Length: 346
Image 1: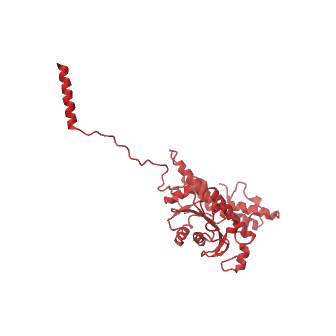
Image 2: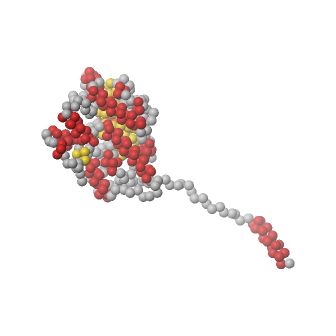
Image 3: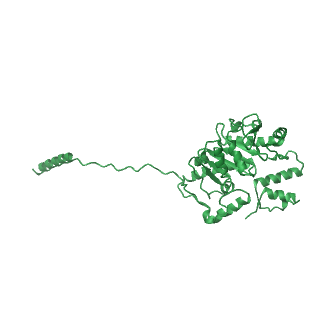
């Protein structure tokens, strides 16, 4: 099986003065590894227009940093690049109809206990960099002209629970939200992209924006990077970047739509074997993604739970109509029949 190369391995190779050409030709590069190689090549050529910008400032900032330092960073090119990323992801969410009205929100960690996030009451299809807010991990807004999203506590509690979490994304894609409405995680072992990038848990419903909602979601991040919020929507997180968190939205939505359609074709759905699923999980683990199935036996990996594809007709079968016995009518018929028979004999 081809080796999987992560960003950390690329960075270590560069730090040791190694040659990137020494990487195996058939190696699978993670998205963040490709970014690291691209940035390294930009730097070697002296190109100052490299698109990548660090999500965390060179000088670590906290909510206790002087306001002047927070303002300097919030208005810096590095922060502006992150704001543009949020806007770009917001526009894609809106274009794909994963959000409606002013729904959906995102956040990027930029310090020990601070994050840039989307504002409240603004359509993700019309986000602008100047709309963004800077908040601390208690939800207090530090900078920004518009009010921060009302659901920021959930994002912040996820980041508190997962110190490696760089970015979070929440929206309402229809097919995966449908699974959330019925409180059912999608079945597994059908498509490799879904298995590698997503591990899905279900959080019970609580009022959106409440601390209780955030707590229930955050508790699931130890094992899941994609969480269905019952009767609400989906939230994802990434230890790499916001785009990866967004990818998870595309992947789970496409997956849910695919299996719903597959369930209507009238044929059994094929799933991976235990050994096939084990190979996929090995790749997933090498990428640093969470999944509760690591360490399970092969025979335990593909449980589809209570989900059953396809629609079933619940209309009861129509009972055959029966005619009741009428003694008076029977007597009349018999009398007429007797008269006819008597006339036929004369």
